[in-house]
Amino acid sequence: MKKTRSQPKTWRKVKLGEYIDIIRGISYSSSDLKKSDDSIYLVNLKNVERGGGFRIDGLKEYSGSYKNEQLVNPGDIIIALTDLTPNAEIVGMPALIPFLEKPACISMDLVKIQIKKGDLDKRYLYYLLNTREYKGWIRGFASGVNVLHLNTDGILEFETSIPEDINEQKRIASILSAFDDKIELNNKIIKILEEMAQEVFKEWFIKFNFPVEFEVKNEKLKVKSLGYKDVGGKFIDSELGKIPEGWKTTTLEEIMNLRREKFKSYDKWKNEKLLDLGRFPTKSLAINSYGRGEEIKTSAFKFYKGDILFGAVRPYFHKVIIAPFDGVTNQSVFVIFPKKEEFYSYLITILFSESTINYATNMASGTKMPVLKYEDLANMNIVLPDFKILSIFNEIGDKFYKILIEKVKENQTLSALRDLLLPKLMSGEIII
Image (cartoon, rainbow, N blue to C red; front, top):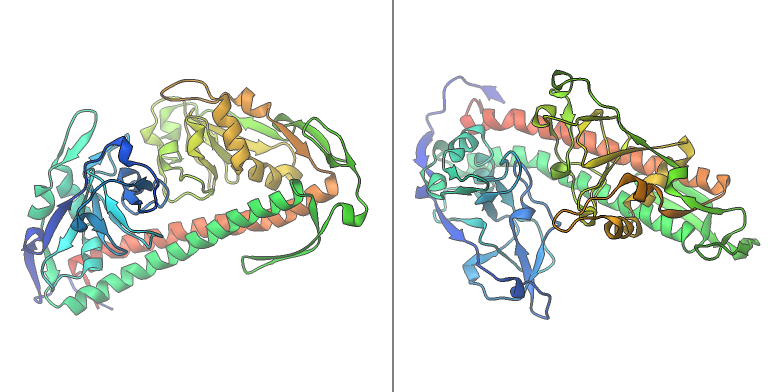
């Protein structure tokens, strides 16, 4: 790579409207949101990550009408037209459509970007829409009191300089996309680890098939299991049904603690890393982004690396994560840690399970915004295995969750490097 202070002569100033058209999404009613033999996915505002990027959960089944141009394919660019987040981080932000299991169209709160001239690379355009210049520009075209709405003229009128040679555009995009591809690979590994932990949990603590040999290597688990009865085990009666001899029924309170450490003042927490519910993914233990403590004005609570953060508001959204660093959160989140080290993996897996989320949803009170009380969560009945099985599961789970946290940290590093390179490559300060 060679550095240059001035923009290359082979770049020229353009307005995006010269190269793109904007395709608006569909207007629909709630009766259209149903699964049928010919239903497709409906991509909506919830699929756009804060600050950009695509969130796979939140896709809706759609059985209504649509136009062919409103369909999206892998690699298509969509942009959010409205914003419901506290700091309006989504409006105007782009996302790339990933591979989806069925056809999909976009909702009315999104637009699709259609390239109409062949000398603009789509992937290069996506990174152009992630530059600080575009983000600063597009904010000026968003207006509203409680909800921001974007005037799409802002997208078309955005003026910038781009390489005239589309191959140079592709080279720049390939460097930046290499970071995103690695991040996506890490996210797939994280998903596999989460699923494996849940499968082992079901196998051992629901089906009572226990390990006699196991090994975790290269994010893969090898386990040889035998049924509890096959190794001469006996069952006893309990209030939760038949359980192995030596086990007992208890409540979550026996294995977990609530951390409620407050910062003394705003100045103490304003520069801390913030994890609030808006940044929690759905059905994933791994975060994709974080904010700054200055976004919280009151009730700031500490959490430490490895703590389990459980979303107490609208628990049906299934927002449970492992903290990959020390930081701050608000009163909508329970900061949980185990009473004993041996409980750690078991506690994470229980709190992340569908059965716990269903229990929390049923116990939450309130109509528009149901809230779960910590006491109700702590009183949930569980089965506590004997120490030997618990220790073995903790050893396996510990390997899973350590790898998961490492992948999250690696993604943060990759994102930071990509964001450092992006303005330099997109401005021509670094040329290939």
